[in-house]
Length: 225
Image (cartoon, rainbow, N blue to C red; front, top):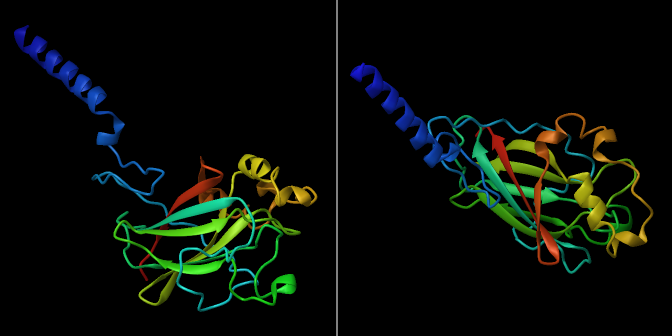
């Protein structure tokens, strides 16, 4: 009887300890700032590959602020790169992004052909695997939902090509402001976008308000080669 009580007490104590420690002690957590808590149960998901699209220009500038003074709601991107096999941050990866401005124009093409640099840039990831960019909330153009293009290079090799997306509800709010509000309602939302339907849900940015703008974060799991 005493032995049974002892075992029961130990089980109860274990349950109390687990409740006190919380689930963060039992599994990995990923926070909005891109940091992670490591544990033996960490699993990572390979970020889906998506089309490069027609607007890529190689050899972008290495810089954090890519706006070049163009108007729009401020957007800070904190893009984390981790090894999909181990979930460990990859330091020194080159993260290459490009997107249209608030009017839906890409630099180097069409109305933006006079410049090949606005809304384009490269950053190296830090020791936590994070690359940070200062930009503006992208606009929209015909046929596509709102998105940002991204490539990840490790040791000179492209290990990921994809696109980053925005929750429709947040975009609806952002587009009520100038300069976005001067354009007609956008044509395509995430659910009806032909590229988003192929894995886009796993490439949604987490967005939070920050002053007059937003901070967007995501963790991209890649293979090192």
